[in-house]
Length: 268
Length: 216
Image (cartoon, rainbow over all chains, first blue to last red):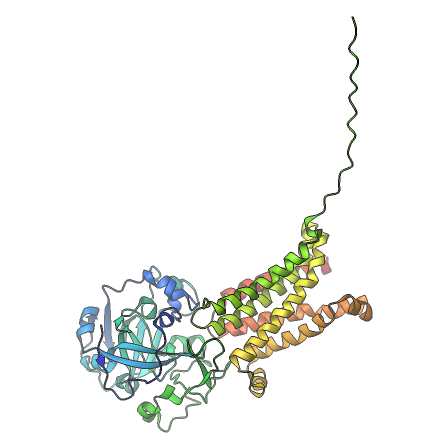
């Protein structure tokens, strides 16, 4: 699945890569359990073929795409992104995929399409975590249309040159590198253009803690912990100091203008 | 006919039974418990050195030490009810050691947080305690453990007088509740209440039993 190095501005972070073993063993994917090690242990039951993604809502050309078509829809690119989890840890991951905009443009969104809502698979028979009441299933995430169309917003199909491991959101997932990790929905089955702002699952679960934007921002703390620093997984051993978190996770020059004039404390 | 000489069978004297020592009273019982209480710490030390704690060993150590603090505190609180349910008064002699180990793990948990999470930046730690309710809860629980650990030897009991000492050590109930709140609050952000619910249910039994005894 190896693609050519991406030429999109900001797509090739210069940071040291997080080890493949850490990227694939330390995951938040509640459909497979709430412990970080649960997804790697349980996700083997996920069936990624056949797989279709429905595209609906405010667009001229809704439709259903098979995973085989999606893989061929645009050339694969390699992109090295920093991933910052809202919990205060981070990784650097080489993804394979293409800009989500490539797919969205095919559907020809109308002028009413102000937002994009992503729905992910919630199948009890494949996903043991869906039986728990931790979240309201299926998992829903959303982006503003300009965020979704931004070239850095990635539809990922692989990592480290390989097909996505199930625990990382196979067969296709979103990667929005300037937002906290939970915004990047995994194992997507539906993409919907909407006029109203979608309600994400985490916002629904705890409105005061997880906002719609959830942009990485060291100056706006989570109500229960500071977001000023982060632990880079696998960096410098057990006693490593945490590193400073960067505004928009270091993608400010690429995405800052999307939020010009907005109060980021209010729109957290 | 001669009669065979009567064989004299020596009467079997009932040998005085050696009173078997109850295993709980065995002299090695306490050293064994001491070593058992050190095993979790040994595991985490070994896990760090041999890279067996996953991708985020610092988090695993901080959380693991917190888990064991709660577990040992729950064991401490279970000793009195167990002693009465099972009719094993000897259990009482282990309570102090488990209680002191609770403080030991709570202190390690605090030190691990201060060192691994906060890089020993004391002003930042002070801000963190003031700002985050779940950190405040954990810190308050640790503070309340200090006077209990400090009065855990016999001379302290004498100096305070048994009554006052017992009154002071009732603080353990508040510590358990605050400690549980610290755990629930820590998990609340991720809606992950399965484990805190188990700890809460066990604590409800341990404290409920005491209330019930009182009211009866």
